[in-house]
Length: 356
Image (tube, rainbow, N blue to C red; front, side, top):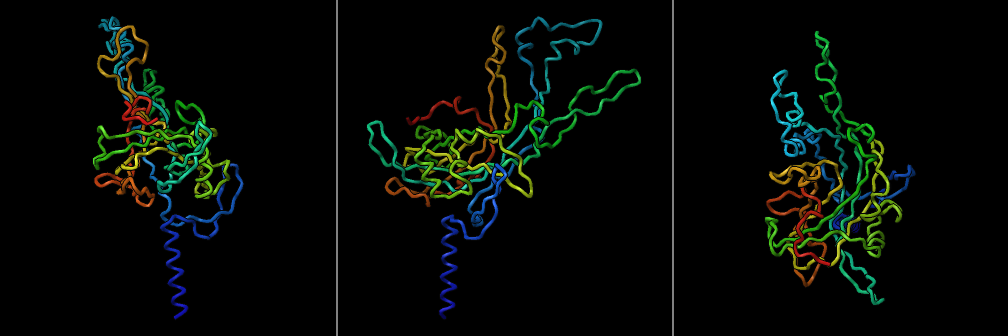
């Protein structure tokens, strides 16, 4: 009977650890970005959420009219008699296929949590505040998509068919292998937390937007609480995480870049919230609204960009009197736990009840 009770108590203790997201004491080897190995305790299954990659060949190209020619120089629209009108500069500026390589990072995160931190005030005193935070790690999976030239075909006349055209998509790991590369892949994040009082997640007059904040005192306390498998110097806030490119992981060696996003002064009465994360991919789309570009304007005037964004959805069935992190649930009825959307950059958002 004593053995039975001991076994039952041990199982109960393990279940409590799992619910709390505490690492179980089974060793594993973690490969750091500098190539060194660190012995750590393995996280229990289900503690982390790994968001599946979502990338498609269609993201590597987009068809647009070159309005700088179509609208900016209408006098170029003429019909030659010696050759096809499709050979004119004006016609060649219609429905141009723009190509680019597209990369994407993998996002792995722990539950959205809270911690109380003493924040220094301008008067020299300390004020205890509730900090919301999301601890995450970034993985570069490689196999990014890039267009490549097809084989040129020479006709009997000597003309080259499909000369210099991009005819297929390849998966590559290095930035210098990608079309329109701007250098090694870095995570330059933007975390936007948006609150709602409706399950439809529709913006209304009660919606509040919060950009993540750099809170050094909170980063130290979160590191001590969470004990991620890295040194404190390798546990980055949103400004530090972009300092170095993220190496490509392999099946045998996964390299993670650990970070935390923090927010302060979140409305305690909220019921629903989303976190939008930009910087996980360079995929974007753009449109030239009718009438936005006028003759004589600077090239690109009026153009609207939207960037591929990961959105995490959360439900918090709590109240303002007792804020507790265990009341936060990922997922909202009628919505997935996470979804990929296209959104304008946060500096293009119209502020909704901004908090300062």
